[in-house]
Image 1 (cartoon, rainbow, N blue to C red):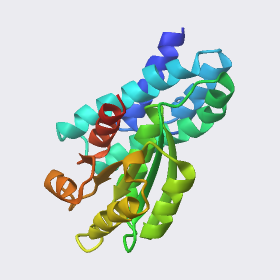
Image 2: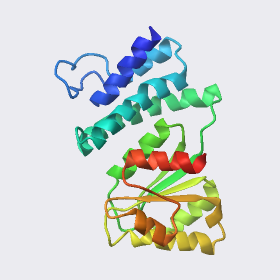
Image 3: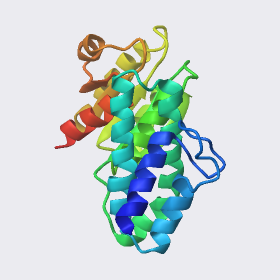
Image 4: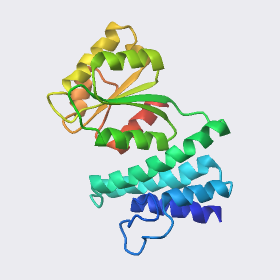
Length: 226
């Protein structure tokens, strides 16, 4: 029975359905239980929270990632699925804390100063939470010093920086320099991403990793943390 619910959670993540009012990608799903209802049922049935995340939410997003790579899904489709996972993770986080499950690591994430775009950052945040990381989202249009101060205070293992404009992505270089000046650069792995950002740019500014999309960002975090 638990496997049936987990399979349904997985399928509804792929369908991008948060609750039963959502239509989904395929016809005839509206009115049937979606991610939120199914996760609640799984909790009521006593299914382990980690199993819900790993076998339901994360495995569903793995399929979404494959569909995105194969250009079967586009950003709005991926965003719908990510939002379903994000809603489920909000429901599950108190249960994770009470179960004593330790997060894999702490991550600060922000869109740099002058840049108001946050869709990509939000997707990355949701995927990282689903992968078992504690994520603190500082928001968008965040100035360099605020980010450096947050790294000092929060002491994360990772810092994710996002930009969608060529005019704002240079703040990433300034932030890394400020981390060096503050003597804390070696304490945190810096990962950068966003439409104008490239692996070459990441290397040039001294970042530790580059994520072309949310799924690659999660892989980079996992590889740097291993």
